[in-house]
Structure formats: C-alpha cells, structure tokens
Length: 120
Length: 453
Image (cartoon, rainbow over all chains, first blue to last red; front, side, top):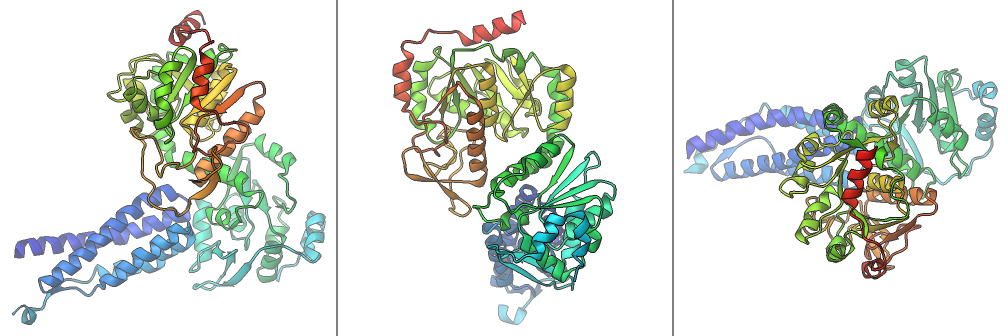
C-alpha cells in the first residue's frame, strides 16, 4: 500500500511539472488563434487536473497532505469552462498564462507530508 | 492624444468623419492593463490581454507574418497595437486596416499617440460604416497575394447581425483550418500525386441532362437512406466518406465516394467497407485512405491552397471550390459535372435529432451542450440547433446555388436547416418521379469517359 502511495505521489509531482509547461503552450496557442490545437490540450489539462484533485483527496484519506488547495484547482476548471463557453479566448489565455501557470509553478515545490499523529 | 491632422492630407474623408459627431451602437472601454499599457474592451469583450496587451499583440502578429504576401489586410484597428507590430515586422508592405467603427479610431486617438500609424505611407485605414462590402477593394485584394489578419477576439466582439460578421467568419474559419492542418495536407499532397488515375476535370460537363444525389451523413439520412436503393442507376449517387457505412448497412452502393479531410480518421471511414468504385479525393486528403483504395482514384485540385493551385495551373487542370467541407466540395464538383438536378440527402447542416450525424456514421457525436449552438429555421418550419461552422457551410451552399443557374436543387432533410434556394422535397416524391428516368450505368460511363479522354 505504501509503495502504491509513493508511486502515485511521484506521478503527481511529474504531472504537476508537465501541467506547468502545458499551460504556457495552451496560452500561446490561444494568443495565436490556434483554437483547435489549444482545445485538444485543454481537454488533457482538464482530465489531468481532475486526476490531481482525486489524488489529493485520496492521499488525505491516507493521512498525506500537500499544500495545494483542490478547491482552487476546481475553480480553475470552472473558470476555464466558463470562458470557453463564451468563446472568450483572450480571457482564457490570460487565465492560463497569468493565473494557472504561476499556481502550478509554485506547486512544483510542494511535496506530500504525512500527519502521523492523526493516523493513530 | 493623437494629432488627427496628419490624416487630413492622407485620408480627408476619414478625417472629416472623425471630426463630426459619431452615432454608433457600440460599447468601448479603454483602461490600463495590469502591466500598465492601455487595453481595450469592445461590446464587453477584451480585444487584448487584460494583463499585458503589448506582449499579447506582438505574439499574435508574429504568428501571422507571411513572407510571400504582397498586402496585409488587418481587421480591427483597436488601439493600433497590431498595426504597429505589423509595421515593425513588415515595414515595406502595404497594410490595409478595416475598422467597422469610427468611434474605435476616435477613442483610440484620444488615448494613444497614433500619429506614426495614421501618417505612415504604407498604412490605409478603411472605416467601413456603410452597410455594404467594398467590392472594389475586395477585387483589388483578390488580385494580389493578400494575407488576411482577423483576430478571433475582434470577430467575436462584432455583433452577430453586423454585415461584416459572416464575411469575416468565412475567411477566418478557412484560414484557421488550413493553418491547423497544413503540415499534414502538404505531406498528403506529395503522396497523393502518386495515386492519380484521373483528374476530376475529365468528368466536367459530361453528365448534362442527368441527375445526381449528394449523400451526406446528417441525422436525416437515417430516414431517407432506404429510398436510395430505388434510385440507383437513375441518379448518380455521390456519397461523402462518413456516410458510406450507413449506405452499406442499407445495401446501397454509391456510384462514387468523395473524401477531402486530411486527417487519418478518413481512412477508418473507408476501411472494411469493401467499396471498389471511384474514389474522388482532394489533392490534400488523407493519403492512407487514397493509397489503400482498390478502385479508380480521381484527384481534385482545390482553390485557395497555393501549393495545390500552382501545381494545377502548371498541369492545366481545373480547380474546385472547397467551401471548407466535404459536402461543399462535392456540390461544386457535381455542378461542374453538368447534372441538371441535384438532390441533397442527409444534408442537415444542423443537429436535427440531438446528434451530429446519422446512426451508423463514422462521424456521429451526441450533442451534449446547447452552448454556442445557434437556432436556425428547419425545412419543416421548426427551429433546430446549428453551429457557426455549419451556418458558414449553409451560406456557402446558398451562394453557390445562386450562381448556378439552370440547375434544379432539392433538399430531402425535413428537420435539416433550410437552405435558401433549395426547396424541401420528400424523398418518396423523388422516387416516384424517377420511374420515368432512363437507367444509366454511371460507373461504366465514367470508365468510358476516362478511357476515351
């Protein structure tokens, strides 16, 4: 079980780094009006962030915590979706470049920690 | 802030209009961005980034530079950032800026120093406030290598009812599609040249007086497909690739199939169908679909694709209007083949039954959200949901039909979007009328035409 937890955490860290890079590519595509290309990546982003949220919540059940707020991640998804529905790609590009990217760049530095006293 | 006097000698008309009171229905909001320089909102939408409009404009303009172009035609003046970056990148080329609102230029001039742009000898600003397209200018642009630059954000900010909206959307969607798939299209083109049995021009004008059916894969095909068997041999049946599976399921073998999309999924449309009749394929269509086809392969060279155009002109073969979709391309082809009556089957141009395509179609998707769908009038008088791109194809059909005199067009999609110039007819009526028609072996005829050519 512990191995599985550590493997999942490693995948989590790896994915966070990829998301940080991906957000920049999405913003670039949107700035260049390459909406189709951006949408493909946004779908992957959305699936990836949903997975990150699930991992954070499952880790909590196993008493592992990380300084990343899953509700903030969820909020990003809601706002991106809202911008896409309005086809307001300037706003969506701004979100990816100036809000989501810095969030993930900071998140790269965070690691899961175990709250042992609660486990008992 | 700008000295509009520099416009006086260069563009007196615009100068005068800017000096007079302006009455326009538009909301303009100019305010500092997070980084400092001004940003602009039109009709509630940001034209530039709220954080860093200068960086945003530069990145967009850099992506639009085309060394092969003679003239840039930029839509939207805004705060002049795009023109300014364009001038930095291409100082020796002519730049025509189309701005639909005088108030935008006036407000921009009040806030930003536009003098270097307004007085630049290579920049012409056209404020198109009159409700008609400037035919003279458009003709001039079509005679030169023109690069249109239409920022998506500006297009979205233009109200739906604005007379320039559909015109600009047509150009933008075409350009976005070509830009997106160009690397695959180019590779397909080079490979497809190795598979030419004939070119479509050899069939042009050879079917005068005969009738054709164009089968698309819209939801209404489920209701009409079983009638098609009775029309085989009476009508030339041309099917788009995505409808082939539906036809096969109903035991209908079309006289030819057409594919235009460059992507690999097209190969799946033809795979395992065992269709060995003529395949009409766009020069840039999916190569693996073309290469694996067992029957006759007929190439189509399309307009608005410089590499393909150059090749076709050199080989003296005709070019076809694609209109952006397989069905629009097919329509141009069957018009040129000379048919006197063209019946559209499965051409819904709308999500008629909460689905995009017929039941067995390889392209079927369920409509899960109403967002960004636009209501359009259907052939039965009800309203159905359509999309911007399907509406664009509908307008293309309408334009093409209005230019094609002497041909009867009919549409069998009851719940499909009404296409101006194409009345609805129940397919059973087509079947009744077809009883008097003489049978024709269309495959035999095509082979005979190509052999004698």
